[in-house]
Length: 250
Length: 250
DNA sequence: GGCTCATGTAAAAGCCGTTCACATGAGCTG
DNA sequence: CAGCTCATGTGAACGGCTTTTACATGAGCC
Image (cartoon, rainbow over all chains, first blue to last red; front, side, top):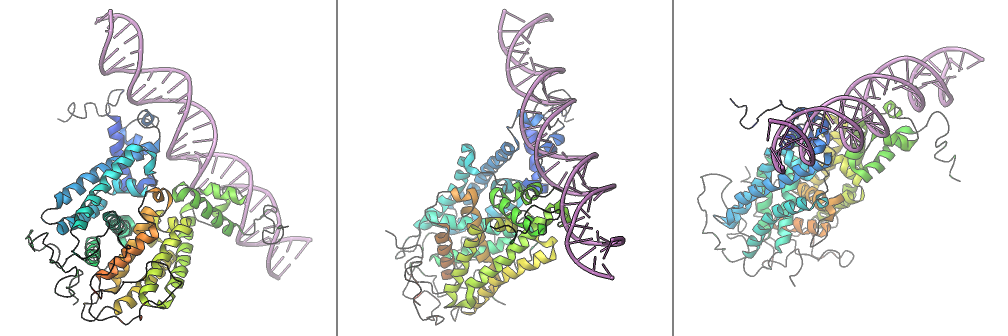
């Protein structure tokens, strides 16, 4: 009983009724399968059940479709990062790491979006709307870094938040792009991409003087491990060098 | 007066004489210009002055050409990393950072190779020779990490060298891919990609407990700033938190 | 000099992107 | 409801790309 509801006349009728959206969905599927490079305008049209010329009524050319997908990707990306950041709850460092995991999760769960956004060669600065969406997403990381930087242990020079944000972004993108997607995921690793990134970020934060001697990732649901935001003051991980973020050496 | 020397009969003669190499060079130029996605087998043939079918005498298909270029790229990459590492001279940390810079320099100076190696979608594990070349290159980073890990300040748990290598690789690739190449280079940054990566690596190493309170990048030619390899023992940067690797806050 | 095989060519098939003239019909206007 | 109009879809056509096939050439060897 699904006719006439949303897909009013899925393929009947001369007019499709919802072709633009159908093309975007089809393209998303195709890109997930074969990558942005292998994706074909004609294939998307075929999949939507229209002629090869029809898409040109909705997109100037193939690149504009790709660009639209990238933009939509950045919007969803922003949403997920925002949710992960959760305004820094329960404490800034925990939330910050959650953002890192959300980054990887997005790259893994939405390979088509990620591909279109970062690996398709779409020039971000060509389309203002796309650029704006991209910047909004990055601003989540930037804002989080800002909050984190404000917590820099007293006595230490405060790291520039922008720099921190760029560093985190490069780590996340590096891990996602090298180890977490497509054939790259087939590289044999001593640990999962998630663990790899988490350790990387923790070590980095420790290098900035943040206290990070905390739980091995995900034990109990979320016990606030230390009084949040009450940095212990010394600017150096308390108690001498803590056990590494990579777990105890066996 | 360059006829008859190397390009013996640049276009004369039925046989080209050196088509395989000419195709590789042509492809390299085309990829540098338009990216691996935009690169065309037919264009390379045209550029070499042969028919569109000729390349098939030397490469099974377009992908094999790409794969050959990636392999050659990994070989040159390995050479440059090896030279930069210089067996850890004058001290391990300095050499390690030099490897990072060499990584970026390669990405910037050899965009075609870098593109074919990491951004063309060539499945590295499809071709054993390619995979071997890729692993040899990574092993340079791995070996350097091994040496670095061996220097871990006494009292600290020794970080797994493999993990360190993967971390460094992800940072370098992240920075290169996001900020240092093509249209990505147009993103406005507060600092150069080189500085960005250098700061990132330094902070990371500090997070592992390595002493990194050293020169602001490139002042005097190479004054060994501190007695190398003689870690000061505490496992924590000596003298409390040193000035940040990002330079003094103004 | 003649054989042979690697290396080149031309032609053709099948795919894609893109454009253009034309067809259809949804929605407004009266 | 008739008729108009314009957004949306079709089919055909152009040029370009990849890849295959049958054929041509000539370099190296006997």
